[in-house]
Image (tube, rainbow, N blue to C red; front, side, top):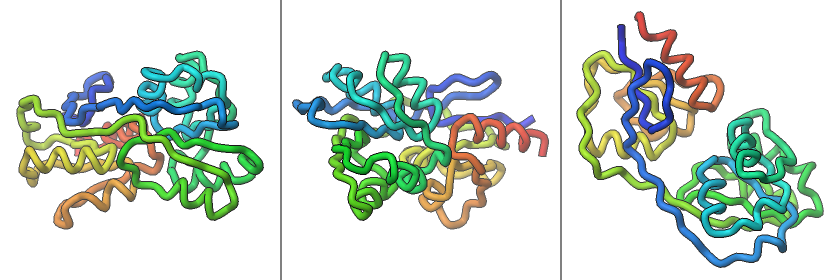
Length: 212
């Protein structure tokens, strides 16, 4: 049976973890209480902002997916809305009617791949962004995944860090979290994209491929 390799430290039963990314928080001084709404598309945005400013808990949070909302609630924040699409651009469109006349702050990573801010600005939403963390390649030494593994790429950064370290084995199968991440794969690599943009969905897809 093929091994499933997740390029993250998130634990799943019978899944091999290969945490090629590390998260670095980027603290800053900001008056969060001037905003009426916070937008989160990542749990890391929640963890990072909580590390240096607790005021975020007093502002309604608009979350891209249920797992993001779960993180908000775990930190005693206020969930105002949970998106349905789990994709940044589609999430932005869901937010447009909800954020009229609100002053909004998108809490995000240093590198983002969606056009969420631009879409909201183009539709008259008053929005700023605050970078609270960045991802970088983990310098730790890891063994290359064994032949016939199913490799799950959950972001463009995981693609970058994997190919900086390893050569692609033709026996591998690639599962990607979405079309944006797929664009960062080398052209010669075939992949299967998850219909839903979540790691859970990628794991489910990988399990269906294990016996191929």
